[in-house]
Length: 88
Image (cartoon, rainbow, N blue to C red; front, side, top):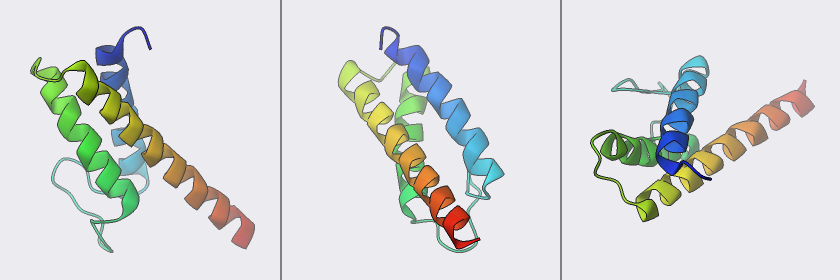
């Protein structure tokens, strides 16, 4: 990625939208049945780095780690969608 700072900011906005649409916590809100789920953990860790990025306090290593967390988050959400579709 040529612009890791912008990529993290974009990924954070997308993750917030998806997590809110799915009923997960964002910005202090929690999902009623478990805030420590895998997607919530990945979001929380990545978002923390995104906030540091907004303040200019995230280095390249942290930005890369945030992108790994976001990728894991989206993979977990896609897997949960696939599992739901096969059950219906």
